[in-house]
Amino acid sequence: MFSVEGSGEALDSVTQTGKWDFAKIPAKEFENHIERNIPAYGFAHSFVARASDFFLSSEDSVCVDFGCSTGNLLASIRARRPIGSCTLVGIDLVPEMIDTAVKLYGDESIDFRVGAMRDFDEPLDLALCVFTLQFTEIEGRGAFLSQVQNQLKPGGALFLFEKTTSKSGRMQEVFSHALSDWKLSQGYTPEEVFGKQQSLVGVMKPLTRDENEDLLRAAGFSSFEQVWGWGAFVGWLALK
Ligand SMILES: C[S@@+](CC[C@H](N)C(=O)[O-])C[C@H]1O[C@@H](n2cnc3c(N)ncnc32)[C@H](O)[C@@H]1O
Image (cartoon, rainbow, N blue to C red; front, side, top):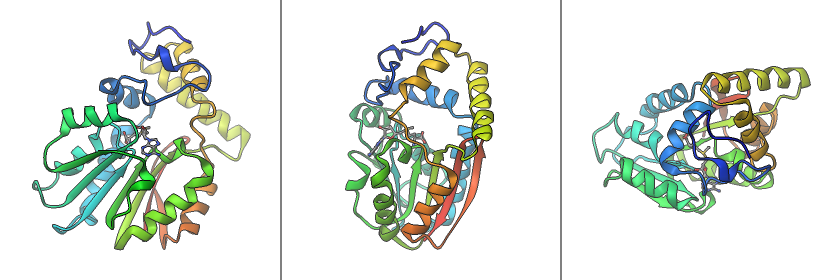
């Protein structure tokens, strides 16, 4: 466990080795937390929101955010278009995240649901999976991506953003150093940086870029390209 004096975040119940749990972190602090833990997080969302224009052009367009947490990405997408001009759905396993999403951004224009991402089985135009797949079991990821690919209407797309590992040990060292150094610049203490790293052991299971791309290819996406990145963090846009 680490001291919370540095960041001021109340995360002490989830910082033991392998104990990271989204259900135990205060959902109202989540946006502040993720912004300080993923460099260029705001740029990732701003790119996705702008690019969503290509895929949500008609009134019957459907966009689903898998692992939406507090719903801020859907709120950014909503802000770009008239209310009711498409269907926006946010799904998250953790009820506290959805409660907070409803409080912060809830109205009739976004359908926030508590649930597992595999349970959504309706047709869609745009799928968002932003730093979520990395928290799911590796053996189920291919099936999930295939399911999304099948549910996408012709012309639809998936944004997949993940923390990755490098297949090169030296590159991995560079990525780890840069990320730890960035977190220190955000006001975390070395104990907090180490504590978070320990807590994620066995909970967040990143794959390499190649492994993620193999999954996208195997799921049947016709093309995909990297559209965002910072060290080990990579964002792809995959087209049906
Ligand atoms: C790192 S957060 C995602 C951040 C969010 N997408 C964003 O862009 O700010 C991961 C989220 O995925 C949710 N989650 C993890 N596994 C899930 C699953 N199988 N189905 C639905 N949500 C899941 C967690 O509860 C958590 O809120």
